[in-house]
Length: 197
Length: 273
Image 1 (cartoon, rainbow over the protein chains, first blue to last red):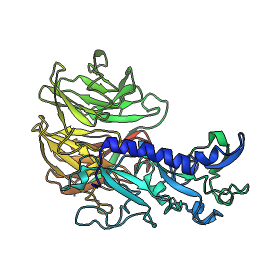
Image 2: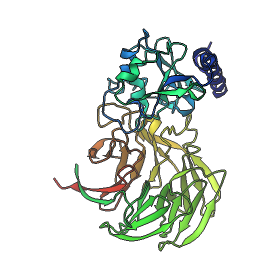
Image 3: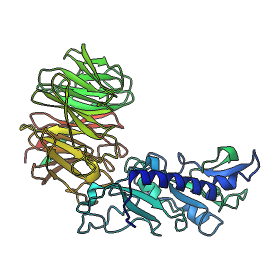
Image 4: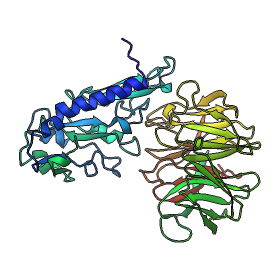
């Protein structure tokens, strides 16, 4: 099967992926919770990795190191509707690594190689810069380290990648270790009806 | 080649010569007067940075350009407002189909070029407003890749259109009819001769050379027409969070750059070595 696909395929894929992710990893779990119950959530506007104005600082990985769950319950999620689909995505590539013979950075950013990409629509094999790409995050590999989130945000990127708690992995402890460690108080409690999945 | 900062114009604030919330575009007229598209108005300074006049636009102004006859064109969403040099509205050119968010305006002979960031294309119209052709829309594949939300271009003395194609890390050359002639630039994350990040350069101006601005980290640079980096004009003076910095160059080679966060126009001039 060709690795290339059309914009319609992309839309179908995005919708299906969203539904599956929602049912499997988020809302499907949440609907089983009682109305009025509260859950933890990462506030992207507070999170050091995604909030605007934080430039030139290292990515915060406390969601990875502090979560009581092995391979943290926090994952990086790409909101495809906001993604620029760039050829040289700073969340995908280590954009300061050496440039290879194709004119692309030679290293990827993700230490767990959790991000993959594929061209959208008609691809130009002669010139990778001519193509748009869809970026997919493998949540089984991602550990929520936040490096891609930090690189994706404005002004370098468009801020389409954010950190989210996966409620099918979160053990819902009332004393979330990440919230205690978070320097920006970005872990907040919200009613289950308002949780973003 | 080196540059030194010689002036800062405007700044964020409520004062008459300041910009309240936005500074999206700048342009110069042959006398060196500076036209700023800020908030929902056009603010005009003389070459020394003294406020001369200002007037309101009906919508937020996304770009500004001064036509050869002195008329002031302001790009907005789905329309271009045309004023005389005193700020009197002459005509509102509305086109729901061909004008989206107009982030750049230029002129070739009697034609008007409008950078439509919504459709990621440069629209070419004749003087009567009749559409002639697109530039950079699908050439050769996917055309202008504009993740940053701004289409910007400059026109050289020969009528060649130099368009920023940030997704490809290039400045592309087009004929007014839309034929792609070539490009300068390439990606590089550390070498200042390259364009870094996901999408740079964001803005371009053309006079005796090609002048560009980049985002993350913000900087202004100048290239020869054959693509050699001649100078990094400035970098540290700009707010680290700003992007889509409009750039304009006067006939003395003074480079004006609009910082979109500090809401100030930085002016640089070449230093004689």
